[in-house]
Length: 159
Image (cartoon, rainbow, N blue to C red; front, top):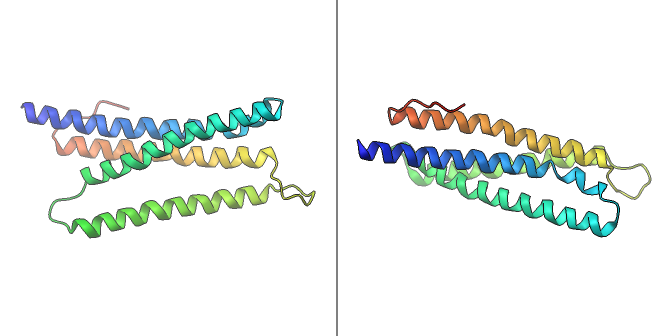
């Protein structure tokens, strides 16, 4: 029916956009270690601001899409306030744990000169960790997308 087709299209569009923005975040975060290779301080700053802008756009898109996707999977008959509270807690806890681990990684790679600066390898390892988490979450997004399409009685043909 037409309403079933419209629901399928909305579901696919929502979850595909979530996966795309998550991928963009993972790619953007991999750009951080590259900002030290441009030679001059001015070139490095331009690269840093560019990577940070892309990362901010991707993060903002993912963060807002999480809310939309969360609303779409609320089971019927549950206390919506409690459910959304738990979802918000999980989101904030994930950010906190990720920041903690990234801090540990950077702290591990501090230089021994006493300046407190972190070597480029530390930023590369941190970026790979963050990107790996983003790419792993794409697997979860794919699985949730499949479950949502199955509820609509539609087979998911995407990878």
